[in-house]
Length: 296
Image (cartoon, rainbow, N blue to C red):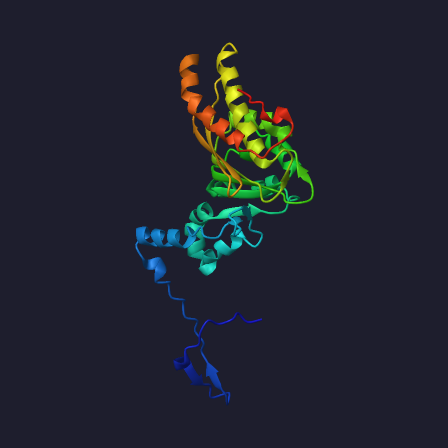
C-alpha cells in the first residue's frame, strides 16, 4: 500500500508523451512547526502550567450539603489530553503534566502497587497527587508500609487521599488505629494524608475515630519520649484538621519535635489537648462510657 501523502503540489503536474494521461510528480510538504512551540521556554512553561493546574474538577467533589464524596466521573486521562497535541509537547512537558494531575483509582479491587510498578521510576517521581478507594484490605496493606507510601522510594507525594468505600458493609477503622500511628511516626515522602468518609458506614462514627486517633498519637508520643530509655522520637510530626461539614480528616506532615523536658512538652501540647477535648464533647452520643475515655 502506498504511503499516505500529506499534500500535493499541483505545479508539478506534467504530461508523459508515451502515456495519454497526466502524470503528477507528487511532493510531500513538511508540516510547519507549531507557533506555540516557538515561544520562549519560560512563557511556554507558564502556559502549560496554566493548562494543567486547573483543580476545579478532581477525584473528590462536594454534594450540595457540603459533604465530600468520590467523583466517579473523574478521570486523569481527561486532564492529560493536551499532551496529545504533538510529540514534542508530550516529551517536553509530560512530567509537568503528571505533577499537576490528580490520579484516581476508584475500583477497590485494582492493584495499586502493580499500576505504580509498571511506571518508569522517573514517571513515579513525577506523580504528586493520588486518590484511591479503600476498604479493610487496603488498610491492612497500608499499615505494612515501610518508610514511604507503597514502599516505593521514588514516590514523592504531596497528597494521598483515602476515600472510604461506600457500601452496605461497615468500616472498622478502630482495628487499625495503633498500627496506623506507628506508620505515621516514620512515614516520609508524603506531605498530606486525607481521609474522606464518602458517606460510608464507620463503626463508632468517623469523627470519633479521628478523635481517638489524635488522642492516641499524643499518648504514644508522650510514652516514647519519657517512658522509654533511650527516648524513641518520631521522625515525622503530624498536624491535623477535621472538617465536620465535608466529613474529611487531614494530616499535614511537619518536622519532628525536639526532645525537651516533660513539663515543657506538656505545655507545648496543652493547646492540642484542649482542642481535642472540645472535639470529643461534640461527638455523636454513644451510650458506651468507654467511648469517652481519653488516651492522655
